[in-house]
Image 1: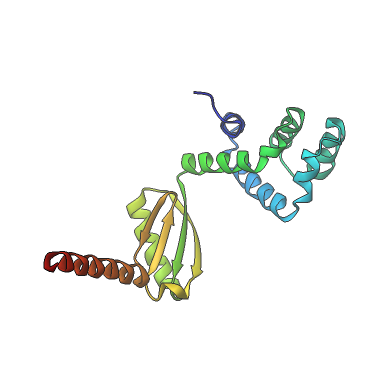
Image 2: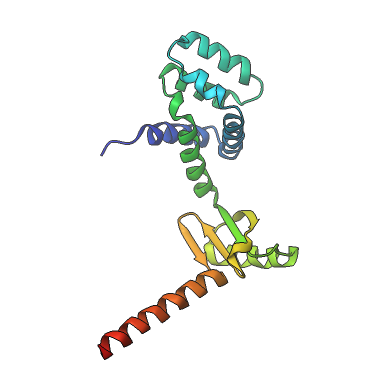
Length: 188
């Protein structure tokens, strides 16, 4: 099966990072670069503009990032310009970051709670998640969602643990409706 463009280039960046023993450094640069790209949407548009020559695009990349990015990441961006793959840059970096985080044992955790958690609650939750998930470190992101009524929803990768009161009430409602339908069918 053929690999996607994102898979091919993120894999190449990952191999380069490991070969140069700079996985963590390039991962941090990748995150920073994604932030820059999302805050400056005109930059990816410029790199994808067919009316601008590759040479001009390379000049823009060098002027913008030389001295700000490692030679490895700068060279990688130049390669994407030369191969006309800059339209995939954000997806390539996303895939690279996932692979790098997995290799380094870093888990990204998103916690939505009905009320703000105290520092002690956060510390307890992080400790439990570290024990239960097998990750070496966690990058936690907390948000308050009053619509949950109570409890919390925890997302790690493609796993979601919904222990919110809203979810429990919805489940109870489904069970009661099912029971009512079954009772109606028995008496009909």
